[in-house]
Length: 213
Image (cartoon, rainbow, N blue to C red; front, side, top):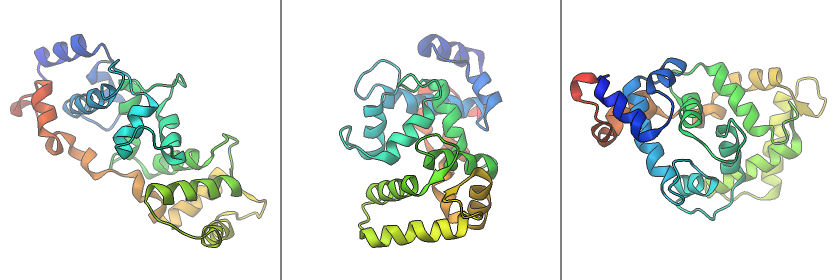
């Protein structure tokens, strides 16, 4: 990456050096810069303070900042690594890295476990799974009866709760997810593999030339 582009990025953004973020993630430096353009659009959609607030996050996901959804809340909470109620650029890049096609499957499985472990107990309990299934169905605009949702939960616990203690631990979840890869299909965003090609306008705006890609 050219020096001028790097200096321009750091002066304008006031965020972590793209080279450092690229070193810590699967993204290249130019991809990190492209992600900054995406981050900037989201973080300036409502509050315009260079940080992503929950309302802006929901607006980016649903085009509605007032729509409440447990699934969106959980994703936001897991992106908010510093637990301060907002997402900065470093958190945004490091968290999106989980969804990169080349991120190890074990990391995706661990993230998905934390997504379902609503209360942070280190286990997935029936109530938590039930709540998340409802939230995901709601996010997908799918309507199922309470009995159908209960059947999904029952079948999941029947297969995953190997020691029948009424909760799913990380090892049980890992074994279950490995046998049911469909669980993790939403944990990979193919366009992240080459975001500079998917969003060429982001690269142009960030000052990265074709010769630097």
